[in-house]
Length: 96
Image (cartoon, rainbow, N blue to C red; front, side, top):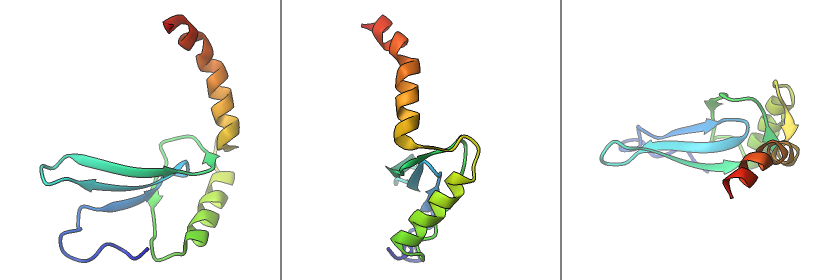
């Protein structure tokens, strides 16, 4: 995917959060919008580096995986999700 065109796209910021890739932008009224896709990995947040669209999808995925594997709190996303579900179960049950 190419970088956004010059002019009119200056408020667009592609970001790599490790746990997700996102594009942040502003609507005409100045509201912040974030569009994101989850990755397969979990790391402690906050984490943010610019997302470089000059790289191929595979390069972005490999860079993100490598960054996550070397970061604090790294776990495959499904493992993290299962652990959080166990911790949240008592609260979910109490709310029902």
